[in-house]
Amino acid sequence: MDAWIGLGANLGERRATLEAALDALRTLPRTRLIARSRLWASAPVDATGPDYLNAVARLDTLLDAHDLLAALQAIEARFGRERAYRNAPRTLDLDLLLAGDATIDTATPRPLVVPHPRLHERAFVLRPMADIDADVMVPGRGPVRQCLARVADQRCVPWP
Image (tube, rainbow, N blue to C red):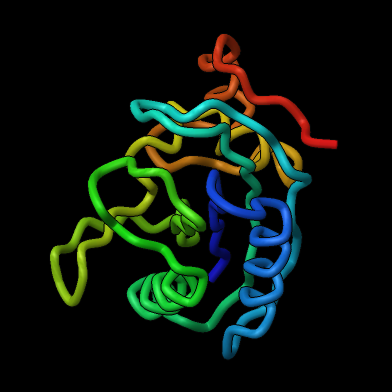
């Protein structure tokens, strides 16, 4: 499966955390990191707190979407992710953005919605995705390039 993972952090040593999280993705079983974006800075959306650093990784994995989600949540926990409230500041956020061309909406074994329900509305996801492949299709929404045109007003800038 071709899986796209969104990475974000706005607490602690953000850059070091994202680089370490990318290393953790490289070690997932039956998974290969194909590509990663550069880092991008963005303001929190629907939240308060410091700016985020964001990136996207593209994986080739034999894990199914639920097993991959469980692995992502285990990585978040290793980095001290707490879910105090919706959109709380975080040390690390890993989101399964796309799982091939699948459309998934399940409550068990853990809640999972793919494509990520707000992927097409977030420059901090779309810009890093475009670093890798601006023509990748977001099921039901079109190519990343087209989605990105709709969020041009959102601040998201390359991080040095």
